[in-house]
Image 1 (cartoon, rainbow, N blue to C red):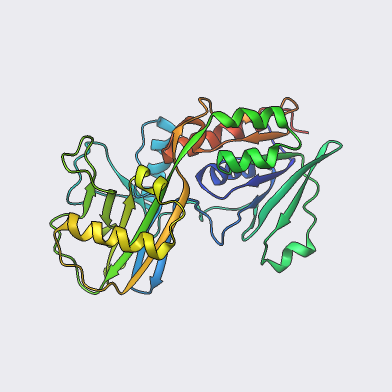
Image 2: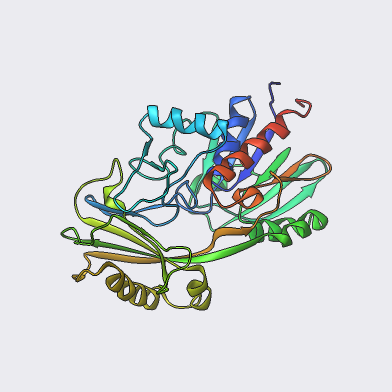
Length: 336
């Protein structure tokens, strides 16, 4: 592999962006990673309520089929940043894995050579000569004003396809138009914590393929029983079905939480006490329904790439493979 000294901007701090950035930095590229949120992870999201309770409200677990992702998970499990998970109620024969102590633990490790800028939303991209200029907005990082983020050789965008399309439309309209084929499904997520464990009889419930009695819930899990979690309060995550979420996309978090909490009480058969903590989160791009069908998109000049789990499918493994494929395409170019 060639040694690179290019200056590369990676937009998005989820699995695709971080896996790409790590591979590039390992080859000597000067990488700046921009993430609009306050932490890395994307849908590898864990909400902490207090020192004894947290809930994973995005991706609940991940599986591995490709040799490269299996190798990655093996390394992370050996390092203690991931672990297998076999909860009561699991019926799938595939091995499930989770991050520990939080879902994004593996992404926060080994960021050597990567400048990470959190709370940094990329508002627009401009091609100026042979370089890319990024305009940053909504930042709370005081160092941003002291840095020059106008001179990048390559830009990698791992935002959800609709957001990537918006960013690329002005500079690369033909490339941006190809993202129109990608479709997502949204999801309302409800997090609940209780002082004492609920008597549900299961730690995980997943909606069957053809239920006799349909529910508005697609998933419910006692996330406090995952490996590496504080065994304090009883924490649950409930995901609504895609169809219900689409119909209630503009509900307030309070309204969505009330309806989902009632549905969870009916589903679990348990009498729900008042929760110690609760929060509802709306994922607008929760699951890729129609993927792009290839690992990434790249400009003809080889200076801009777009990718993510939306390229190949909805799994975390798809995001990992897309990010690594982009890094390889960049590193296979001439070094300078």
